[in-house]
Structure formats: C-alpha cells, structure tokens
Length: 365
Image (cartoon, rainbow, N blue to C red):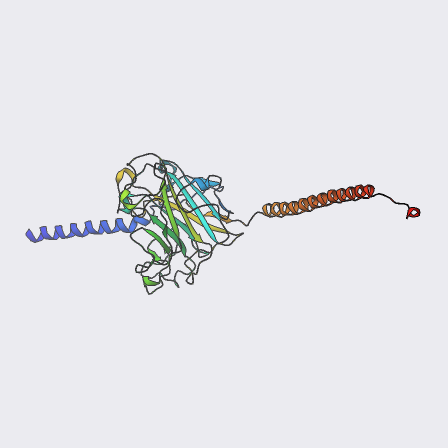
C-alpha cells in the first residue's frame, strides 16, 4: 500500500506540473478559431509638421493634431464586452522629414509602484517589417522557438517598441542609441527596441543569431506624463510616486524615432514619405493593483492599422512663395512711389530756384 501511495503522489505531481506548463505555454494562444472584424475607418495620418512638438510627455503641443480614438480590447480575445473600461486610446502621429513622432493618450487612474514595471502602466508599438508578417501572432511565423531564425522566418519580421515606466521619471527623456553595457535592454527604465517573428521568438534589435547583446541598438526615445501631476517644472527620482494613487486623469506616452535607421538585419520598419506602413499599439494596466502579465494586454485593433506618412502640403509651399513675391513686389512699388515723389520735389525746387535769379539784359552790360 505504501508503494501504491507513493506512485499516486508522483503521478499527481506530474499532472500538476504538466498543467502549469500547459497554462504558461497557452498564454499566447487563443482558444478556438481566431475571429477579427477591424474598423475599416481606423487610420493614422502622420502629417509634415517640422518643429511642432517637444518630446517631454506633455500633450499641449498635440492639441491641434488630429488622431484616432481606438477602443481597447484584449489582444487574445477582442470581445467588445471585455473592453478597457476607463476609455479609449487616442493615437496621434506626425513627422518632420527626418523623425517620426507618436503620442498615445489613454484615460486611467494614476497607479505607480517604483521599481515594479508590472504594477505600472505600459505601452508598446508594433510595425510590420516583413511582407508576410501578420498582426495576429506577432508576425505569424509557424516555427517553434528552437527553430525560428532569420532564415526559417524570413519575411515574418515585426518591429516592436515597449515602454514600461516603473523606473522612469515623468517628463524625462529615455531611450536612444547606444546604451553601453546592456545592449538596448536598459532594465532600469524599461524602454526596449525589439523585433519578433512570433510571440515566442523575440530578440533585442540588432541582435543576430549569435545572441550577442553588445551589438544591440535602440533607435527609440520616449517620455510619459499623467494629467493629475501638478508640478510642471520637472520631477526628480526622489519625488516618486509623484502624486497620490487612484487620481483620475489621462496617461500620455510620447515617442520618436528616425524615419530611416541603420538597420542591416531586417529588424526595423523604414518609413517613407508618401507611403503607408502597418502598425498597432498595445496597453498594459495593473487592474485592481494586480501586476499585469505579458499576454494580458489591450490593443487598438485585431489587425494592422494603416499609418500614412504624408509629404509637405503643396498649398503651404505656394502660399509661402506667393507671400515672398508679394512682399518683393510691394517693396519695389514703395521705392517707385518714393522716387516719383522725390523727382517732383526736385523739379519744383529747381524751378523755384530759377525764378529767384535776377535777369540782366545784355544791352546794359
């Protein structure tokens, strides 16, 4: 009986561990067939606005920029009944010819736990790089983690920027390239530049098959803010948690990246003026104080959203050139008027001077 009891306990432990493992593996897999009905009107336009915004997390610069309001639904189960309750996410974009800028706005009570990214809100941007890369399954390559590489998953690349704020100061700028000693994965601030072929095959940007993080790159910069903050002169780390918890308001996440990068490994999206890209945005939030987990995020759509990078407006160029021409013509006209008046005055003065000279007849000499 003792041997039988031990055998039963052993089988029970195996079953328990097996169920835990299956649960973890299934965290990025949906139950049943994938069903998606995206909003056909959803579209972001990045207009040409040079020198328009300052990268500090504040939204005032973006007041006159049009965006799109997206309902946030669970990434793995985009059901309308399971939407993020606090409100929609507004996404705005613009470019200055060299860099592209993004502003993400989402309502949410202020929660912040210093040093714990999983108990703070977090956002991500994802872009299609490979022509076969799908939004669903983060690129959609069918290969397993031990077989996915730049050959077996060629064409399924997606570019990802993820920003966790647990160790970042609001209003301060983070990211950029390079971050020496830790590749681009600065765990202290949580702003990471990645690429992926599927949810289980993700790497730091710039890392090849060797896995050497010393070559990793980070082309993104970002900052964040919350509308409940009352100090606008600038926070320091000692001010954490920056305001009291549960204050109602809006989170702002502001990002920028060069339109073209030094990518040599098919890991970065390359933006081109006059063309469209495909992107998505995600949001993590610690509901009821519980830490979020990797697959427990909301997204703006169940499929790619078009991002149009528009050229500078031709009407603006015409107005500018017309204004300079009008100014030149006006100045020339003013000079001609002045010259005409001067000529009349000189003529009058000369005639008056001649009349004042006495005439002596020749016969009196």
